[in-house]
Length: 296
Image 1: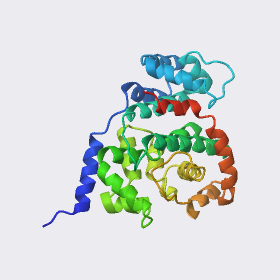
Image 2: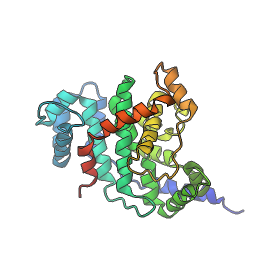
Image 3: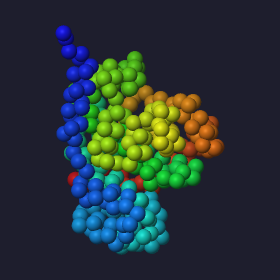
Image 4: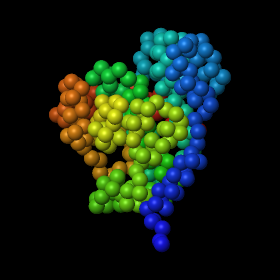
């Protein structure tokens, strides 16, 4: 009996996932500490300070226009006290993602630098929208936006030939990117990205936002966060921020906007133009974050 070629391709992708890089130990421990209500600012600062490079980057980011604190933040302990445990955790996680994938190579079909610009843009747009709708997980919104397309980096790195075929097939206009992924590898970048997030033991709401950012109504835990990421992703395409590898962006579905209405959030498709203006102002403040993706 012939082996199903789709099953073989999924097996290849799955085997690639097993060999994916892990998060740096300091960041994994940092996530554990922040999730422990008994953790003090001093103990978290001591952990972060064991990694000099991470410490320097967190302080640089803490003093950037993106966080807008009026006084200089000179120590990790001060950053934790001023910005909060979760914000510092989100900084460390974001910076570590850049570090883990810093050697990822692209090509004509997939510009990795432009991809990260799109990802940071989506993080900024998600944060802006979370603040606008008074969503309780603003920091998580940035990380969810930043990581929403992380599956594409994995596909590019581990099944590069097939990924190039996927991009070409979508660009030809015959299929959506998701349909092209399903046809060529039998799964899609949201699923692959959520596998990585699970491997890294990231919060369930981050895993969910990666898995369902194209169909947020499928999310069981925090559909509002996933809807925020979905709209933020479209805003980046609308404002030509970076390049996600998708030639033909798809507008958020009606069901996405219904999630906002169900949550009593006054946001609809008619607000896209105003959201785009707010987002561009927010994105102008990401210069420091952008600098990290160009570091050697």
